[in-house]
Image 1 (tube, rainbow, N blue to C red):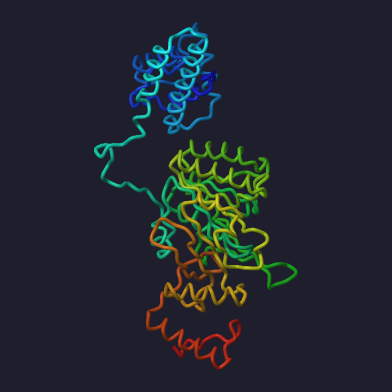
Image 2 (tube, one colour):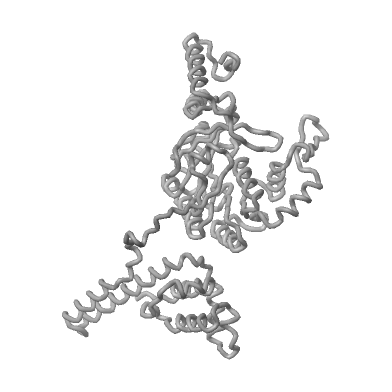
Length: 450
């Protein structure tokens, strides 16, 4: 028979974390082996109209209470998991009782009639009623909390980025994944919405500079020329701007310090929980393949599942950056199956998007991206990048054309062209192809001609 101590103490830890659970939940003592602990916590809660470690330990002579507090503090739990813990506890209770009754019957301790009666009572226990919702139990109002990227067409296609969901972004090396993630993070930070950021390829200093540069106007930037080659320069905010940003955004973002912490997913989740307890609701992991053992497909699935559960259990947004499979590095336009190499990862993500630089496309990809952008009224020659929505429960999977501001490292949506412009564009393309005067890379359309 299974011991339920660990499971029960997870429930007690949730109660200590959020005592109101006692009012919201109808706990039945029969399911608890340590029912005395449940009763003790309930009595203390109603006596003091609250519950914390000080209340439980207020009686210095109550050594059991002190030991209980120490044990509960060691449990890392999220109070919203209480539903799963309690359901598992009841299932374990039933399985233990079935095992006990079966053993009693086999050893002729109880008769067949007693056996069938007890089994009937167990199987008709109503502990799973919460899984069956009647119409009156279902709210008519749909409440969806979401954030926006400030790229209008992308927000339309995704219907924003919903809380409680996992979002996956991919693209081949040097095509703009990190730039896009930092831009999203920057937009949230500007609204004083707390952000957690893990960068596996940047130092904390590099990330902060990248972030602040994207918040600046041109006149707030300083361009530092290289001493040996005047054509090389680095961009940074002016010192007074950095001090200003440090002050107004002091509590709006935290960075995973991978200089002193090993990039292990379990440690990552633990640090994310600390950030969550400090009010962070927006999490960026760039990229999750920098975590230990992530090169193994089965480990990738486990890692993504952990991030999905973290998003769902805490009602937060998690954005993961993923590299495509190494075998696909020669192509720029990716499919779902090119990302991380397993359909399981795709199934766990609410949204999947890829980003491509139009100036780095090969001929085959260029023609595909050109057609995809045109299908959503963008001219590829006016786009520096394209985001393709591969999966969403939003309004559709299409491409979004982007322009790039190199100085402040920021994307904005490209101009949408009219149906008449689309038609004219295709006529010119088709005419050039038929006359063999079309070169996909060099022979650009004269914009004045259309």
